[in-house]
Amino acid sequence: MEEMESRPEEVISFPDPDPPFAQPPSLRKLLRCLALFGPAAVVASISVGAGETVLAVRTGAWSGYSLLWLVLLAALTKNLFLQYALGRYTLLTGEYLGDAWLRIPGPRGWFLWFILIIEVTMAPFFVAAIAGACGGLMRTIFGGGDPRLWGTLFALAAIGLGVGVTSARMEQQQVIICGVLVLGTLIGTIVSSPSWTEILKGLFPSASSLPIRNGCRQTPRSSSALGCWSLPRFLDTSGGA
Image 1 (spheres, rainbow, N blue to C red):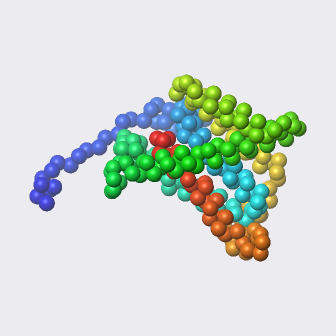
Image 2: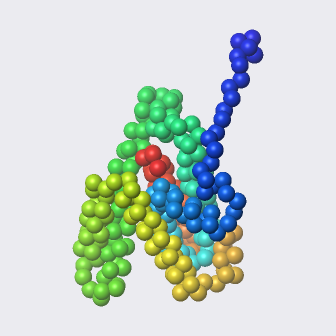
């Protein structure tokens, strides 16, 4: 106890913010900050494309507005409690998450091996789901063709874009991808003309509004959907995103 009292206090100092962030809020500041969006686009593209691209749309088509609260809960779980918290830890400590997880009680590295096994096991299913959706979309647009062939071409194109790419080039690619995803989401929302009243009601869970199939409500399927949204975020953070 005496050693702790006699130990001098550590002073933590933070560097001054970059010029764009030190300026007062203005349109010029916003434009200058957008010029630094490259690294953030990489993280954003991982977050946006992990589950919402397929699972959120499918859940909406299946249940309408009744499970909108689940989509919101999943987004908060993976983005705020998982991605933001782990990213903040890495930013403030400068320690890679893999090194931090090595200190988890038990055999050294067991948690990393656990994540690796899950990722290797589940990754093909996520890739197949996204490639299949792309294949079906291209078949609808062009009015023919095997969706499996279209999906395979999309997967090969994605692999080709990622082979030998530099960090700067990756940032440029992800800026375009994020822009397309956000713009497509806005256009899809406007074209579908959603009911804002039903959206507001869907933000609050209601057991009576769950879809019924074969005489029973689909509560287990709703719970599994939350896990499907959260798992990709858990796997992405293990890669140092």
